[in-house]
Length: 173
Image (cartoon, rainbow, N blue to C red):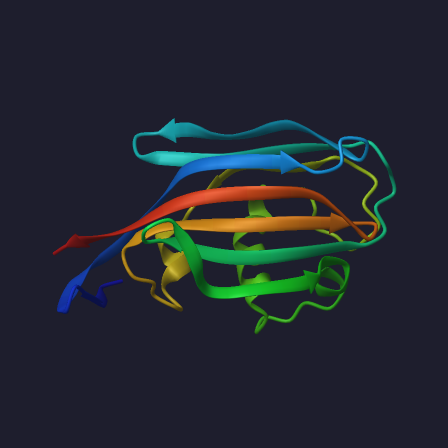
């Protein structure tokens, strides 16, 4: 797909490319969850996969809410596009394609073992999730560095925050 974007006052024609650059996980409640893995892995030339393995210490997890926000790096990271909180159990039971969270969940789903509604009685694993340039075809975003902050609240308390960093570039044709 050829994208047209305004960059520094000029219209740029090109193909947007995305890639993971970093990933961090912060545990807020060590009695609830242990992070076994939270890292990026090179899968091939220019292919970077995100991996997260969360070992749940308290089961079942009956309620899950996720606050999902996007930040753009300017001089530091600043809020960008959206900051939304969703009830994951409800979204998985009643999928709504117009919900922005569902759009990102659909991209994660092939790499994710949490493909069912609550309760969760198992560890949560995201394996080799690769950003697909087509993910941003519905709403093109400008070139730059971005951070996704994902705050996970389970059983009514904040348990974990995942920070995922990515670059969006435009290769000129």
